[in-house]
Image (cartoon, rainbow, N blue to C red; front, side, top):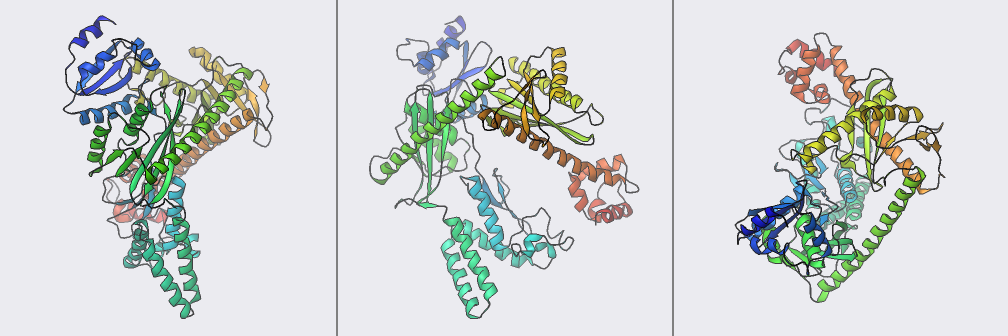
Length: 616
């Protein structure tokens, strides 16, 4: 224990608060809370007999610590959650899967509101329904609601665009009322939207009764086409509600949380019960669990899972008692705006349900370990076969996409332990290369990417940048190029000049543009098409190609529209820039009316009319 720590231990207050442990590089390695800072922090530096192996390892790396005094234990808990989320410390138990569940959103304040799916709940007076625990179910529900009640799904603005375009296929298939035709009043559309709202509010019984009666009446009047329409609506309602399973006689809003642990591996399972229905279940791998007790594991999970959550239930039922149960209940009650209980079921249906959740946690852990073992074996084989210096846990792949050299872009995808990490994907516009030069374009992309990564690493070392703010850190263990020998040698030459030593390989394609093998620039490695190695490379190649070409299409489409603006007499680069700044996108310019275009500085009424006629 160094002198800095000894001095600070003497000044610890007898108050609740949060403490942060730092290593020699001034990186936060642990965040904890305490009822009494003086007692809790001192425990780490006293007798090590009762310390777990993980705590012993952590204490060896502590160079200094800081603390923040709070007014209450609940405030300390909230601050602890925020700091763990911010720093992601090495020795804290961390929730690996930080999921944002989707909502269905109905816009307000518009004549023809739209219903859409979003993962962000904003304070915009819109109506939100959810969250949905399965994105596929949310998308299917949205699709069926649109088809059932004739709600539009296009990106047009109504009533502005009414009558300006031809109806799409959905209108002709009678799956959309056709607001675009201008023949649907706001009252008619509002009635359809009201029916969708009632469904989302759970009033399916009333809707079924109404549509059944309407179907029977239409049938009696021999209006068989209308009766068939009501029949299809009933089938769609059944299709959505059948995805929800009943849970005995429990009619409450509850989350059941259990866990399974084996050595250093841990998995938490959550069953979500609403109004007697199991809406879904999720499992979560926990990093840094070590051999911690179940109570600490559950406590760490609950705090991170419900931090800023939109789906806090009235009851949270745990497999085991946790130490800070009372503080967590108070904190969640404040977040929810009504009382939340955190308990352990002792008997009856609650206990039986918890046993089922526990069984699922054990199975999920087994599945996670099996998948991890397969991935580890694959990465080990990759390291040996391709003679790599380290295990390639972080693999980055790059591709260039352009049209005869125009609108050239680069795409970067990231695979961590064999799994794509989409939040780490990046896009690059080629800046220094003219014409269709894939080799030079690839070198530019890799130069910019690695330079950014090195700069961010230096900023993190000096404390000017936090890890969660970095966009290009860490650097990859292996670089895969969507290209052959020429691409690899060009990039290797550039990297050698800079002194960068990251392994670079190319994914070679055959005459049918399918993955054939891997090259290091000197020799080519081939694998059986049925081997895990081949499937791994083929998957990466398809993903990076999709990512790059999608971005290229976006850029190309935008540039085409912006270039077409300059074809209009009186529009030059300055006016084009002013239009883009005012409307925000090229698509918005294309849709704007003459009176809207006139609001832009330098756009006369005559010029606005020419722009409008260009696209209409």
